[in-house]
Length: 456
Figure: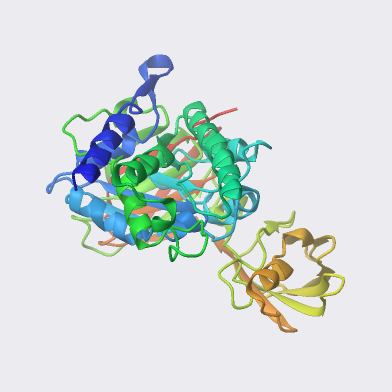
């Protein structure tokens, strides 16, 4: 117990040193690390709770950490904050894979905090590019985890892994600093715990007998505790929305008939006064005199369905073609599977578009309507078969949806606070938002205009 207390005291000392702010032009502040998230958590009161959304992303280390337990611990530590979370890691998907899936999983989101861990991509610069691309698209705080101590045999193989993970962990710390992300030195604190308690790495890995990279229950508990130590309870509040260079608040209150607002940013959210919103309310939205359904940025492809008897998506990346998208569910049907030559054919069909062409996994496919584009190399069919030893059946179906995230009209509900009105990956030009009241007397707190951390 004494050693465990020592670990957490050390953790707090190390992690507190990473909390700081960076001043930008015109007196605004580009808040870095997870200062904004910490301030939202700590400044929440019973009378004025803050909403804090966390997105967990990466691969199996995040996936197996039991993030729901971590969030429950945060709720206990910050009882007045409204904490919600999304859990989207993909086991076995390293940085090169996540570079594909991130367009389905993260770019359309606007959480307050992203907690991320993944392997690979250091020496070839992909990890750096991955974090930079996140910073170019969304304003979220980002918390990067470096690598814990794994176990392997023989000792020379373990030494090689440790050397590689030492190198990568130092690089992750540097990337965090480069792009203003929070950083948790899991590796150093994990090693401290092993040394202080005189235990070997295998005792926190898998079944403690077979070499493993995945923490067992004890290891995951330690990992959660290390991450939790970053979320310090304090009366010192550093974040001020009025000085935030990435966000702008426009007060609204009650709208009688309509309101027009000019703004520049990549993401705009309407925050409803859901405590006083009792009557049925319906509003319509236009951006630059266009309905959201007329803007390409309103559409998004959700992560495709899983491979046969697998947790992995059957295909990592699908993109929209040049033809303007519509909301619909799509089906890819796999057939003529040739395992000797590692090839197969597929056909694509939309519930509204209908049959939209055939292709193979050996080339690039553009659907007949030019609504959907698929690179055959992004299929995971044979990869999944190799890992799980299950043959994909003929006529296996992969589903994916094209959804309109930003709606033309919105029914304001008493139990819901945030509504997305506009999103665009990198468009920070000036826009005109108009809100027209269709029914009721809507009461709003404000509009939240967000810009990405990096603007090029």
